[in-house]
Image 1 (cartoon, rainbow over the protein chains, first blue to last red):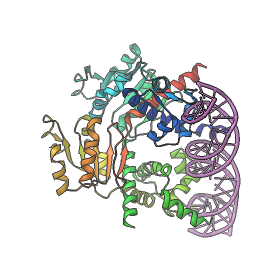
Image 2: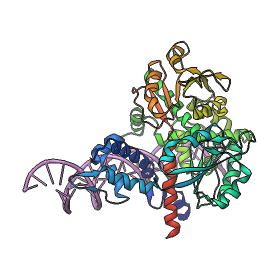
Image 3: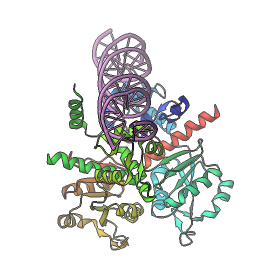
Image 4: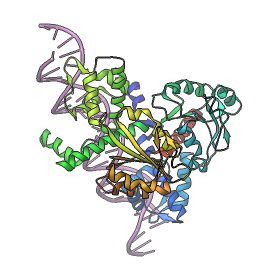
Length: 224
Length: 224
DNA sequence: TAGATTGTTAATCGATTAACAATC
DNA sequence: TAGATTGTTAATCGATTAACAATC
């Protein structure tokens, strides 16, 4: 394999290993909880225990982004949370549009946790005349044929795809054409997008398969 | 240490590495697609290309479960798919109940992909009098207070939790008490369950945080 | 100050990739 | 048969864990 090809396959973007990136939301959630409980400081040992990982790993992970702690003291919860929020882009009004206002789309549109963190769904689109015009969480569902025109006047950073699998690629193409930089994809299909566009795929079905596998493994173990 | 001994020890301690387990649904989906297209055979090289992984890894992964290929030929698609379906417990009528018939719950209950693979949601429960009695995908939503009584007469292997975070642990406890062996959790909360119960958590919110992080990283990269 | 705990380097472990004999 | 491709062992690479000097 050529060096370039191998490099492309590496599970990294810009130096931060994907394994670390995947832990960041976990740190964020824990620190939020601690902040809510008005805990002032926490050590890597305590944080690690809550995350069910190794204290070295906590320090290793955080050190990739800066030096947030103090020797002999640990980490100030409010400060570390603030830094991780910055790293994750939390609390900075990220504009989103959502396509596919079926049950799943409406569930996402109603999720307050996202809004609270600054991820704002600003418009909903659907194809079904029965759905177009209905209200979801104070937004009127628009005709998906208006998607391009809408994004031309009100750009969004993230497009959420909650359509059936068959429609997803076409919608992704449109979102990309009209300047969306990230796609949050709930359709069970691998999207093709240009290199500069990020895709995050929520693998709902795969998750059920994994659960099923684990059930069967445990069965075996307990029978033996 | 002899190879067999090492293999035995690994299997005893950890079973199949989680990294491998996570790839299984991907193999399954690809092989299904190939079977639908009536492709007869596939090599590890071709399969790897479609999975965007290394051919060695495909052979390595599959060899953990048995020997499914033939030298000089590759893998018979229908046979390999059948074996992977067995491994994942696909097509063996797995009984499920779902608690929380909001938008997300109804989206899951309507998902035909699961039914097709033998994962059957047999009952829906909710707490809201407005929702109880309504019909979702030919099932009448029951009062969540009947959950225990229902499971006592009609046991289920998997319980799906689509309730708000605050209710999730209480529901998980009930599901476990009434014999559910796996929990598919969509509530953004870490559930505590006995060791013998499997939990698979769908991290919807974390996925958005990861996308947001990647967006910001790409921004940096393209600005620089 | 003295104990605590970080940030970082070094060691270990596990996962991925390469190589190749076996064999269809 | 001869080319193709597996299953498996060996080498490499990356991630996790341990160790410890720095220092609050």
